[in-house]
Length: 454
Picture 1 (tube, rainbow, N blue to C red):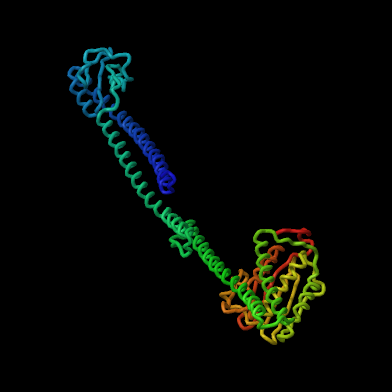
Picture 2 (picture 1 turned 90 degrees about the horizontal axis):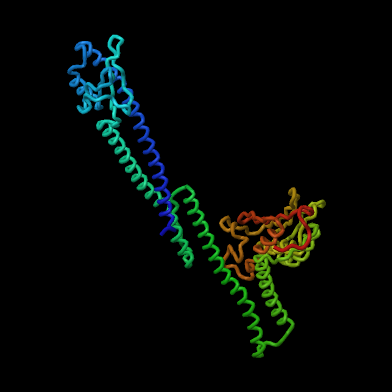
């Protein structure tokens, strides 16, 4: 229970509320008491001066303190205090409490309020609460009422704050609980789970990130399923052909001939290339793909690859050209891997360029990098497929066969190898006009040479 975020948030807010409201209530109570006492003391001083004037007037009219008891009792009722009057010998002549008359003022009495002076001669002393009985009941009742009101206000404010915290915690924790429930369902294999984005704050950003992650996982799962299907298809076709050739030989339908051997060899090489591609991707994922980097002249390397693939382009009526500056700087790369990158891009261009088309390999100096592009005049790629062309086994045309394209691993290998060299790759394409695949490689001297694992 204590591990609940909602409960911890509620307890934290209650503690903050108790401290804040309690501090405010205590400060307000003390301030009210202090200011009230200050006010009453100021008012008492004025009242006592009036009492002093009344006693002087009484003494003048009666030439003594005879009968002053009734006046002192009235003063006590007016002020709410115990009023005591002594004569010039400190003997009590009047007491609003009616108990001290005739006694002598004690040494432990409170300080006198004022001496009573008639024509320059002290004739008595006025005391208010001489025995220290404290605040009169009316003032005490007033302060108790104020403190009670402050306590009630603090309790109401605390209750309102707790209710508000409950509502706020529900608003904060609710989306998180929805995320947790969706994540648990995804853990069980339901990748259709999405959560509603209800705000633009951090929780809303978390919900958006979750939805994006779910979209990515769903897409990767679909690609995985497609990959299994594609691998099975790519393996099934050559294996079926090899099996057919062997069964025909066993049945004596055909005889062993150089043409049959060439056909079987072609199917075996197709299987070998597929397995090699899968192995390279697996090594790259595991960080075990080795790069032997050294300064490489791209002009010479591109020429070698173009010459190798010219035999495939000529029968299709496709022209392969190069446009590389003669002073192009060398790059820091593994020549065999760079050759594989260019070969895969050219093979892809040959697959999608119709007869009579043209493929051009270009390069340019881009500061600390060299940009290499393979541009074709092929069918192009639709915009919705551009973000996924470098993913494994991705095919924009699901009906593509072995005669119209490979297994969908060539461009994925290109991306892995380019990024292994510290470069990046991208594609620009227009449907019906062709595509341009561009990748970058660091110049020689911009990174350490030698063997490197990725």
